[in-house]
Length: 446
Image (cartoon, rainbow, N blue to C red):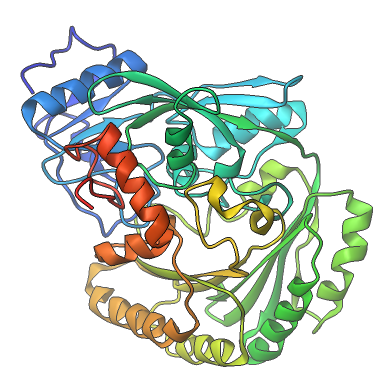
């Protein structure tokens, strides 16, 4: 680290004995407790270049922090140099071209606030404090996905600092293979210091949550399956088994309709009438309100153990297994979530991006959460047991939902053999020594 001094960069270097280091190494998942060799809070691309060069020369691996929301806590690593982009958060919109360029440390809250001023948006996550970088690089499931594709499908160019300290552009015209890899291949190829996205007209949306009692979970999830099978592209519906704030097990159905509100009211009427729900919070709202709707329910600092897989169908047996498993949950903060895919996600050519499994109808996320580390053994065991019981219904995995302690084979499951080999070739080209290895790693030797 002697190669970096305060005069070399505009940002800040934090070492273990420095004030601010403890706060800077904390990430969203409170289970993660790692101590990097140094954290470099960069202010611009030049700072990132210097940090990457210093890490390479010192023999340190590089971890990259955007929003810090990754389920496995990959923004920090023991003994690594962390390139912290959280001070780089500007967003610029071209309303005529309907594009936006955003710094690598921007969150979806930052992004949506600026793009919505022009009545525009692109697919982002479901929690506003999530970073655009990690979500996009791993694919990017969100409320607008069925209408406009994943976040990575809307990525049209990127500025990347590579392992040898070069700054390159990845676009359809420059380094197109690198752009292909960035569109779902994870953070394996460099530090992305800016993302340029295609935007779409998005104004007021019809969104919110319906709540049913847990004793009706089977019929609710069966109806959810039937309803989503014919849903129009403008409609995304998620469903989850969870516990209400007053301690009651419930089934939540979460809705986003991104077309005309009047048409949305007609489309979702059967969903609102079914049951009927004990709570109906669906209403017209700004897209930014929908995007922050779940923020309070997923605060930073909890212990989080996450397991996931895609599903081509939602069978009665899978529903039974989820309900039975959730009846034995060890923490009221734990949730079992189903994200409906299809629509535009399924119509994009499979070979167009590194993201795979476009034939999946749903994404399952078992989000084990608890406030006290003493609950970890029971919570981890419960999460693993339910995930294992649901394996007969699995069809690959979303790389962004790979959690703590996942095996290398699971990374390969995210891409399939053919795409994994193509990504490994790209890794050998841009990072032959695996400087960027603190991620869902694609090794250059594969």
